[in-house]
Length: 246
Image (tube, rainbow, N blue to C red; front, side, top):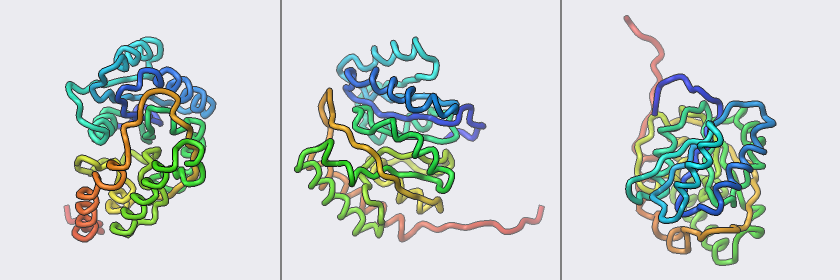
């Protein structure tokens, strides 16, 4: 991550794959939620080599608003890579990550910003609202996957699969990228010594496009990543220098 002084307060970092019909509404919703806060912000959307017109829509949005930025992969790399690339390109003191499908509701942004006053990372929890946006299979598979992650990692995050988060830029400064890391950011932050809290968030039904996740993604695909995180929890150490001799 860049060591330069952040030029804006809030960076919205959003991975995108084939979301052409959601992007305009997403940017409008972020503006409506964030403008009243009177904080400088940017909206950085990382296009994971979409096969639809997502990139053309992003170019249009950026032409009309200098706060909208975008990057496009030369080939499909996955959600973790898109998030990581967006975070590295971002300029904000705080980073807010959310999905491009509008299931994460920008109206929750003020609550995230307020919660950042007491914690380094704020995670959204959809537990109370999932019935409004998902079917039974997706809800059940998410709950099982969340239970497995918490059981093996010793975590207590109620909705580890929710990528709607806000955190200080320093939280990701020393992290090393790996595939699937977006599922474990709260745990990785704790390993680095940062504080993590949760807030309830809305969960909207998808109105356009197709979901990129199913039962396989939630229950099985991240198992090896989970074992790696478990190993990191056992082997990583922290230190703090108390004094120096010049």
